[in-house]
Image (cartoon, rainbow, N blue to C red; front, side, top):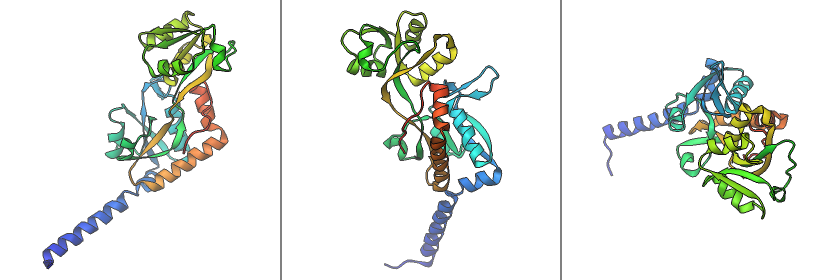
Length: 263
């Protein structure tokens, strides 16, 4: 098949453009180090992972993780508030270098962005006062547990609850937590985010994590092809796991260590 000089030139230009794009796709880490700033998308409406404190500054587990990564890179962090809907588009349009926003990993998301190793747990669990001795599911027998009707924790609790446990179901998370805070139930089965917010607002309860129902860890999102940045962040996460920083952050905000997290 004959190819004209014009077609050859167009094809050569296209290949050149693709090559340039591939090179550009690997510049995020270099750009961050040159500008001495990393833009990290975080939630501000999802305590205890990310929320606005009384001083109007973002705080929470995801915010602490963002600051840790910036500190380890030796750069300034620019926190970019995002919602669940726009956090991935912010990566794709370079409004953020990383997304640290309770991001779960699944096949659909892996088609459009890359993920680091997991940095924090996201789980459903049973919580109760520190004074209550709960070591196994059998210890729930004869006790009352509040849970939101139809929620994931309701479904998981049904699989493990022993005979004799008094499960009290409420119509939403607010009612479930209000009942526990008021002493209408001895324990509460809920998500890490709801429990963490409850413990922050009601320290007098002395509530703590007791038993795990289901674990779904969080990952950091990175734009496709940014392998150098991904490797750097994975190294920071690995070091933070070894040093205990990851466990300390989880304990501070979620009431339990992070434990073993997937790569």
